[in-house]
Image (cartoon, rainbow, N blue to C red; front, side, top):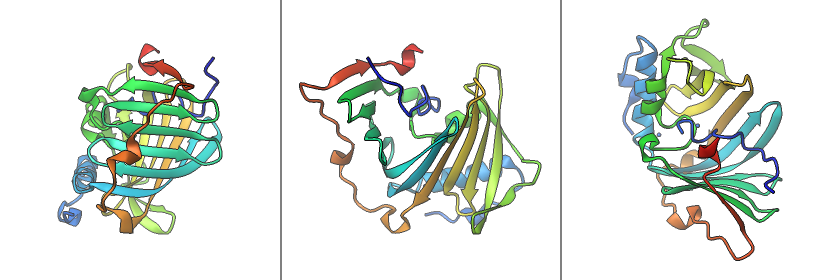
Length: 221
């Protein structure tokens, strides 16, 4: 039986979280910031870095590898679990239990990494200005902040907050699920790794004869 994991169901499929000069886009409203972020995402082919992930009060962290348009790998530190997209399937891997959950990627949702499919995000959520304004202090820098409010009551999240650097890099996403659970997803980029070669082999998972396979559990929820 599949044990309870650190992955909330549907987290990476609700969307299913980038060199142009984004400073040339003058910020008048939330969509101006969305345009800056979209420009940056469009220019990033690869990157590596680290992530911090909090769900319902439980914290995790690890390393991340990304390759455009739809490949990524997240290795959770200390729990022997991974999330991996090879462009065709999304894999939830529980190495300590030798369990693999295989999900077919919905091509209509394009990039399954949280926050990176902005076109789908703004289709379901309206970008808005926070009460404190678009520019906020984030760690040791000034960054943009925008709020995404659901356009209808069928949306998977009650609210989404996104923080991005002035250059358009997504730094942090905070959200409240429809069940009232809080989650945070924070990225730290290895800037020297951006657009450096990354092998497709980094995103390949091959189950062995002992692997317990489950398919499409997320889409059955």
